[in-house]
Each structure stands twice: as structure tokens, then as C-alpha cells.
Image (cartoon, rainbow, N blue to C red; front, side):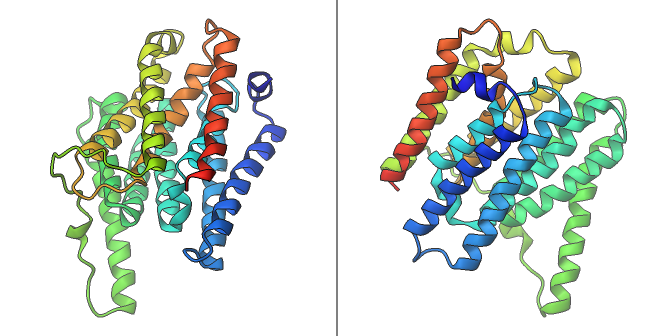
Length: 305
């Protein structure tokens, strides 16, 4: 059974999921040869597999979940459902920078090197923003993390912004060395028009419905997820929920919405679905059914994109 196989986090599960994700990416690249050059395809493949490795590392290292592969499985499946991410290596790189920032924020639960971790998170956030302007929302997430873990020290609130500015200065200095004009960083700010529009193509609609259903399931099981966790584990879970809410709000009201934004929502849901599937009181048949349905949708999506 799938639940029995993925209830552990061992090299065999990692190899299987990386093979699944890599095959999904290769199939997309083969079907869209006119859109992707070989170099872009290769770099995108390396970046998406790096994201998978990093998710596995985050789950194991921070221990806000048990040692299982559910979150990595859900990331791989949601990536294959939202195949638009395979189309743009730069967006995959942005996703990798998000994970690097998130790794530093979730490690704050150890209460060690808080200043350095907040600074690093801000630094990685800048590079994520270069890939997609919506990632500036991560600065708000860094503020929430500072409140959760260092709320009695005001100076910590500024460290994320300081790291962001250092990344900006480094980028600006590099650009000026090779070019005559400075980039327009104001164009990276997110824009909102507060108009909700669900007129998407069928593949994006299917992806939207999957995210909505997973969101409803998450709300239903919120209480049993939180109860067994320690305080710092609850704080980490809250950070993931905030990340999910921020990207959901942005996707609803963004003036320049792109289907790729669904993948950033999927990232939060992938982590949190892992917490749902580790609930001991949840019947095995329900977990098994959810996993089979998600994998089936991932395979079915290839006939639509």
C-alpha cells in the first residue's frame, strides 16, 4: 500500500519520488520541445530535483513532522498536476530560493543564531523576488517568524529587511559591472486590482479545484494536526499556514496573475498535507484513497497540457 511505503523516509522512497518527478519533467519537456531549449530543460530539471531534495531535508531536519515521505510525495504530485512550472526554469529557481528562505525560518525553533537565520531568510527572499515579484510576500512571513521567536527584541524585526537589502546591493553591484544602467527594482513590486477571475484553461481549473479541496481538508483536520505538536512545532506549522494564506490572497487579487502562482500555493499545501497524513486517528483507507487520487490526477493532467 502507498501509505505503508511512504510512511517512512528512507533512500528508497527518495529515489522513487525523484524518479517520478524527473520522469514527469522529462515527459513535459519532450511534449513541448518548441518551448524549451535543451539547456533550459537541463537547468530546470536540476532545479526541480534540488527543490525535492530540499523539501526532504527540511522535513527531516526540523522534525515538525514524523519521519515520513508524505510531504515530498505531495510536492511531486502537485508539481505534475501544475505542469506549468516545468515551462519556466526561472520560476523553478524562484521556488528553490523560497525553500532556502523557509529552511532558515523553520530552523528558528532551535532558538540558535536567530539573527543570522532571519538575515539569511531575507537574503534568499531577494533572489526569489528576482524570479517572481509575488515572492516579496515572504518579507511578511519573516516578520511573523520574528514575532513568534523573538517578539521581545525589536531589532530582530529589521534583520529580514537588512538581508533583503544586502541581496539587492550585491545584485546591483554585479549588474553595474556588466551593464551601464541599473535595473528598475520598482517593477518587482506586486500589483493588485482586487478583481477575482476564474476564467482559466481546463488544466488550470483542474489544478485550482485540487487546491481548493486540499484546503478544505486542511481546515477540517486543523485541530488534530495542532494538538499533538509542541509549541515551537506549532509555530512552524503556523508559518506554513501564513505562507499558504499569503500566496492564496495574492493569487486571488493579483493584477498580473499567472498560473505559476498555483505552484506557490501547492508548496504550502504539500508540507501541510504531510501533517494530515500522519494523523494517527485518521483511517488508513482515507489516507490510501487520497494518495491514489492525487497520483491519478497527476497522470491524467498529462493528457490536458
